[in-house]
Length: 110
Image 1 (tube, rainbow, N blue to C red):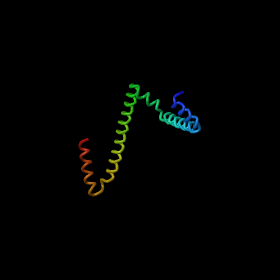
Image 2: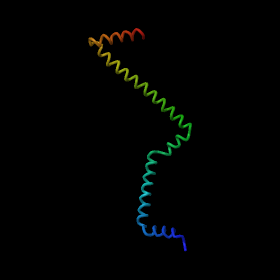
Image 3: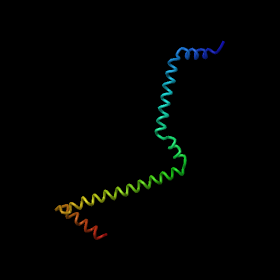
Image 4: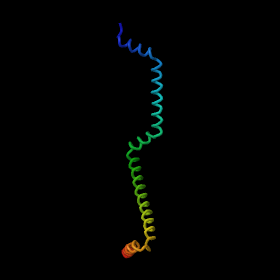
C-alpha cells in the first residue's frame, strides 16, 4: 500500500486539469508582464550603474554640476527680469523714490 497523501494529490491534479492549465497560463502571462516592465525600466542598466563605483561617482558628479549650473543660470535670469521690471517703476511717486534710493546705494557700492 502506498502513501495515502500521494494518491490524494494525484487525484486532485487529475480531477482538475483545466483549472491547473488555466492557472499556469495566467501565471505565465503575469511573469511576461513583469519581464516587460523590468525591460522598460532598464533595470539592468540601473544595477550596473549602482554596482560600479566609478560610474556612480561620474554620474553623481555630472548631476551635481548640471544642477549647480542650472540653478545659477536660473537665478541670474530671474533676478535680471526682476531688476528690469522694478526699473520700470522708478517714475511711480511713492515706490519710485524708494527704488531710486536703492539704485543710488547700488551704484555707490559698485
